[in-house]
Amino acid sequence: MAKPVLLITRRLTDAVHARAMRDYDAILNLDDTVFTRDALIARCQTVDAVLPCHSEHFSADVIAALPDRLKVIANHSVGVDHVDLAAAGARGIVVTNTPDVLSDATAEIAILCMLGAARRGAEGDRMVRDGKWNFWSPAFMVGRQVTGKRFGVLGMGRVGQVTAERARGFGMTVHYHNRSRLAPHLEKGAVFHDTVEGLMAVSDVLSLHCPSTPDTLDVINARTLALLPEGAVLVNTARGNLVDEDALIEALSHGKLFAAGLDVFKTEPGGNPRIAALPNVFMLPHIGSATQETRDAMGHRALDNLDAVFAGRTPGDLLV
Ligand code: 8YV
Image 1: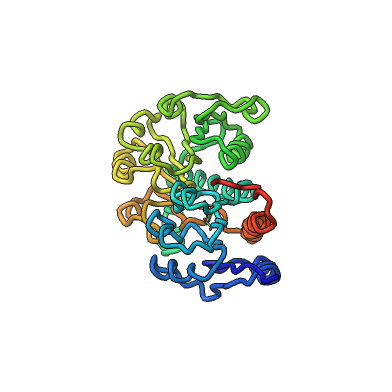
Image 2 (image 1 turned 60 degrees about the vertical axis):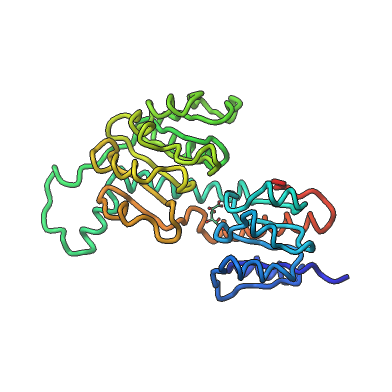
């Protein structure tokens, strides 16, 4: 029997490519060219499945232009805000994601962002790198200690739970808001707040881990930022759309926020030059899941989902 034709939109790991080539008639993108909308549609015309990253946008109009033979969008990501799930569901296209396997890697980056922001990592690095470190004093580069402080988690899903566990290693008290309260064995003593506002008021560090949906668009805005304790630290490793960047710049410029650690931005790639101009921001280029182990695991998880669909089984990570 002919193997299903699979388009892999971006360069994945060698191990994932090898498995895809073995089990599928796989079309790779070894040059890692970023497809335009039209190129994405064109390349999907002759395939049975696509394995995209969050860089490929399957909006309703793109989904409408997909061929009937395309049965699955097996995402190489946990976030699926780049896919119009309702439009895919209406066309009977299966959509899957890759949860769990990136939680540890993303939690590492969240902790890096927290420490980089609280302890002025970007400023210090730049000073030494630029040859401008010509002075030392006990009053110099004084940051915020996180040990023993309150760690607020907005979105206590898999990544939020692992990040909270890492924060406990710093003796931090965990507080969270989630759509529903977790069972005690998952909560592990974390304090549940039934509103975003309640969480903001107790978060010395606030770390965002909720999905980007119409409901969470700009959930961090002038009103909610004002509720944080003075001199709080904001960490975002989830999605740029969660934060009103103008309000963030205001809060960082006037001391409401001590600092922010950001791995994601509203505009990607690129970020926000006005945020980049602020000294009290530690920034990374959306690399939460970028480790060899996790990239392998994400690719294999996406292929597991595809294998299930083509074997007539329900994929483990079925979204629609
Ligand atoms: C990746 C992510 O950078 O999984 C997600 O939602 O944002 C990241 O893990 C990316 O999507 C990899 O394809």
